[in-house]
Image (cartoon, rainbow, N blue to C red; front, top):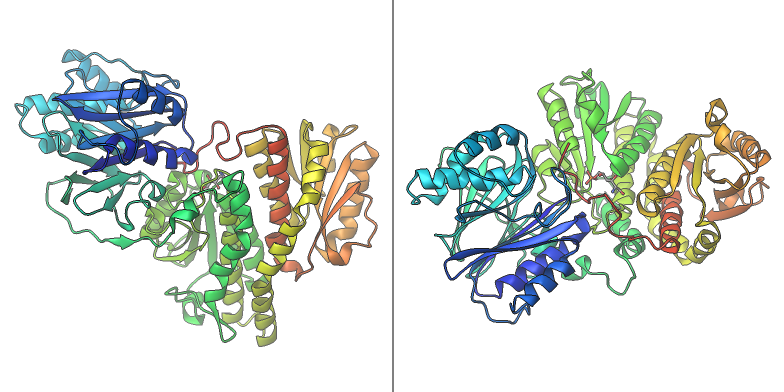
Length: 619
Ligand code: AGP
């Protein structure tokens, strides 16, 4: 989604803004722009297209864009826009300047009552130059600023916010206050980076870590007044509120490609390390420790059911979680797509534990689902990657995945570490409830600890997948079929392929195909089938035969112990053996590699697939 940066200090402001926007490119966007005050004027430079177009436009106007360059501008704001209201165009790009040239605004989120506000402002003589909802924020703040005799920037922002309905991270400049930036936040993230005689703003940490590790996560319904040497946060009534400074320990390398062609490739290669960092510190002396989460027998005896909510890839991790918890703990679990959950009138109460899964911790659908569950009395546990994110702060308890920053839009290491957390939870709950004995408890822990080595082995054989993909990338439609855990993995494999290679794909339960979808199988259709469950492999062989008879080419992903089983497939990719309950952790990686190489062969933009955004903060 859209990205925001802001800076005040002695560095070359335009260079800091451009660099910040580049580091947010992964979020997905279609235009970019900056605004700054110079010689008593608010300047705006914005362009449809990538940040490099913006860079060119700024350069052509004679501005120095080197980080060591001279700074003649103190405060500046910048934005990458992912179009919602109004097509991608120069006019609709942010920043938006008010008609009188007093106020300039960048915005993430949606102003829901923008039509009424626009009508109101038009009556007052304001003219609009874009189709966006955001432009009303700039005009409305200017309207109140003028009403207050152009003397109260902060008051004008506070007043305008009373009229605005919707979600926002707003970053605002006023021509009469060249040394000040004001921000407002509701339901969209703003991170403040603290420096020495300089301060930063961003919608996401990667834009800041080159300069500072000391950050403040702004709370909802607050405004920030920032100068180069001070920050002040106030609530809607103008009362100063306290804030907490967090230290981010991500290293700068984590947000660079480090020699890999794409972030996605780098992040797949980080899976063994990320998995280990998520699991190993939580297993000590044959016991699973889940930080402050009190999941002993007492806590669990207060829970009748578990409700998992998440979106996209995180939802697929949740599906595996549902299977595991039900199998290992015999507690009923529902796993629902977050955007559907909210409207499903869910049957939950204080004896329900809601597990919320999100890499970013900012996905609006997931946040809303968590709030809905909380309103109905449910307890909440979040599995989140981004430290200090909204979901992490609003849940009763949080289990962090230790994946480090995930830059590629296609989630890979975040998924594997989300699986790590659901396995830790399911195994711990099961033991605490007395459903598994000491030996099984220890054996499952030991299996988890062996996963990094097995993931490394899969990576060392990735050229087999690369070769297969280079013979198949012209496929128009691909089906993933599996049963049980392999079905949930198929759902994730299909999503990964679709989102980065744009090849149509569907995931089907092996036994369900014959109830309609098999009509789509014809000569040469590619079918990919993870087969890892002993009990189900006979049935899967029948399903493979069904599609082969109709002309399909089949790739099977199987564990070593099935290597001699003689499935009727055309190709096999063999993963290391493990307890069959844990196979999704290993089958995910070949599926991700397959999607990656199919997309590379097709020449797709791997890290920034079309129409997609890393963090989805609209409903
Ligand atoms: C993953 O490859 C996708 N880009 C997407 O489905 C993602 O998992 C989903 O939007 C949820 O994001 P979150 O984990 O940050 O909440």
